[in-house]
Length: 413
Image 1 (cartoon, rainbow, N blue to C red):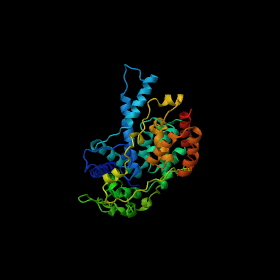
Image 2 (cartoon, rainbow, N blue to C red):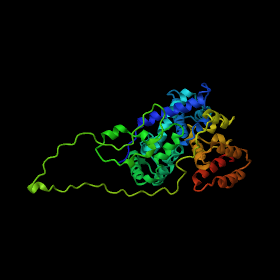
Image 3 (cartoon, rainbow, N blue to C red):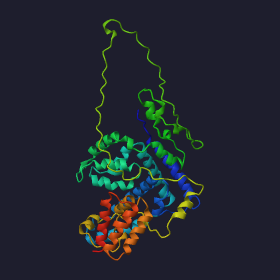
Image 4 (tube, rainbow, N blue to C red):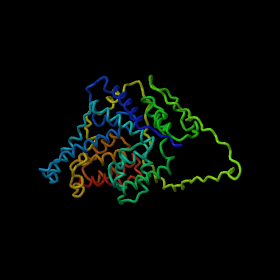
C-alpha cells in the first residue's frame, strides 16, 4: 500500500524549521536584512533556497504587472525600454527583513519536502503553474528552480515532442504514468529527510497522513512499509508517530453457518487487474544529481557562517536579474548590448548558473565579469569554448552555450 503524506504536517515542519533558522540568523541582529546572494546560501539544502528565489520572482513579476494603466501606452518602445531598466534596477535591490523572509522560507521548506513525498504536485504547480497549455521548451525553462529529483522531471520532458503545444490535463496524466513507470529514479524520501533532520529532527513517519491511514480499508500492513528512521529522536515536547502496523479495532461480524447443498460451493470471484503500463523511455542523461551535497551542522551559528561567506560588493543582480517586460521585443530586434552582465535576464541567469556553472553563483559572476573585459568576440568565444568548457566539463550543454555565444555576438556586433 502506498503511503500518504500530509501537506499540513509538511507545512508545520516548514514553519518550525524556518523559525529555528531565522532565530539563528536574525537573533543576534533583529533588524538585519538579506540580499539575493545571502538568500541563495541561506540553508545547506539548495532546493529550499531555489524555491525561495522562485517565490521572489513571482512577487517581482506581480509588481511589474501592476505598472499598467488605461491612460498610458505601456507598449511604446521607449516606455518598455525605460520600464526594463527600472525593473532590472529594482531586481538588484532585494532587501528582506525577517518578517518578510520567514514565510517565504517556511513555504519553500514545505515545497521541497513535497518534491520528495510526491513529485506529481511539484510538476503541476512548479513546472506547469497556472498555464492551460505548455510546450516541452516552456517546461524545460522552469527546471531552473528544481534541484531535487531534477533528472526525473528532465527525463519526462525529454519524452515530449518539441515545439508542440500540449493540454494541461494530457501533461498531468502522462507525467503520472511516467512517474509510476520510473519510480525507482525518484530520490528516496529517507535521504531527503536526513538532510532536513540535520537542521531540525525529522523522520519520514512524521510526515505520514494519519487521518488517511485511519480511514483506509482494513488491510494487513507489513511493518517494513514504515521505515525504521521513525525512531529518530524528536525535539522535546513533540509527539512521535507510531511506526506500528495499522490494526483494525472494530468487532468482526458474527459468521453465518456454512451453507449446504448446491450453495455450498460459492462461485469463483474474478478481480480485474489493471493493464500494465509500458514504461516511457528513461532520461537520456541525468542533468544533475538529485540532492546537492550538504555539510553536517557545526557549532558555528548560521548567521556567522553567512556573514563570513557573503561577498561585500555582490549586487542583487548576482542573484536575480530582471525578467524584462520587453523580452519578446528585444529578442526579435536583438539589439547590441554594452554589458553582458546587464543583458542577461533572470531566466537566462538561472539557466547559466544551474546548467553551466554547477549552481555556483560567484563562479558565474566571475566568468561573466571576465567576458565583459575582453576586447573582441574571438577572444570571448575562445574563452567560452575552451577554458570554461574544459573547466566545467560541458557535455551536452550546446543549447545553453549557444545562448551565451549569441549574447557575445550582440555585445561585439
